[in-house]
Length: 399
Image 1 (cartoon, rainbow, N blue to C red):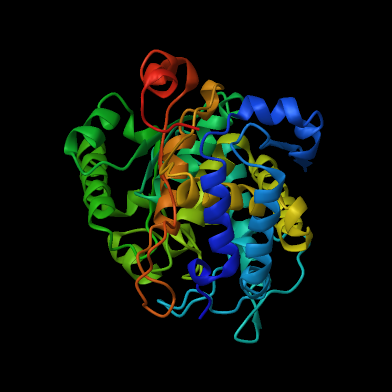
Image 2: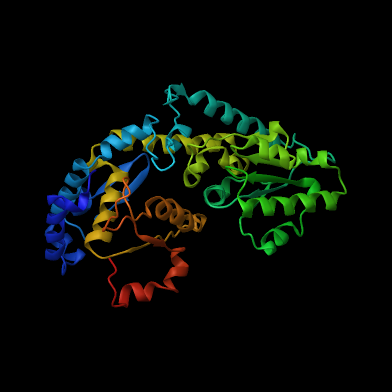
């Protein structure tokens, strides 16, 4: 099993880190007039400037050699091919297939998953078009105006973040609410001023057994039935589910045709690209949702084909490894200045820390190197009046 910390490259990086201990980034620019051009990259409309990191070309070369020495290239291809790289659960990891807009076959145990993905997209398309056009009517004949997504973790953070980020594209007659907290005040406050005859609930739960989600779903169902004095069958026009557990969703009272499918090879923190992204299609429109998938697919293709020294995700990962393992910078602040991205830090907290928070390797062997930073942050304007002084003037190490 590959162990990066035992390699000669790792030892050389430790030596380079000691040499660079007193370096200042401003001095790098003085010595390297082309530093910005050499340490920036544009891919599919995304621009990455990593020149303002405390890192040299020599360090980058060693980090890229470390990546080349590792099984990264093999793992990338295994992931895209549908192999079971999630060894703890013996599952493929195929969020990339969800956004495979080239529609090339992706095989899992010899079966192409793309027809199922395309069928799920058609289901999202027909439903989102019906809601947005006003053709989908509640039990009393009124169109839907309020949409409440009930989920937790990736079933909340992903679609919530994207809907907020694309707020300017939101349908003008629809309002969106996201409920994740098990504290009853969250759901009660959300429901307080809504008309149940115009309200749609999306119950997003991979297994339909998550306690927090089920509790909020039961509260919503009770509120709906009591407020409308309606019959159990009326919920078919007001409750839909996104789940792999169709039987449990039907037992809750959701009609089978209102259950949106996804699969156990979709990790929760990557699930916004699946039917979990239903609120995105409802808010920004199905065509907008497809554009989102297409953008992600472009980056997936870049990630799988670009050499490591020109590979945007790989460069970001290597710079992160340098910071947390060799520079002693064990936290990472994400500070968006666009208010539309105010949910991005919370989304990235799960995406990064839940993915990389490990203390053992694939064989169960304890490791003695850092696998990821503590991710935190908020919008820049607020941060400037909250924690920036400590970052700029405090005595701890901040890069």
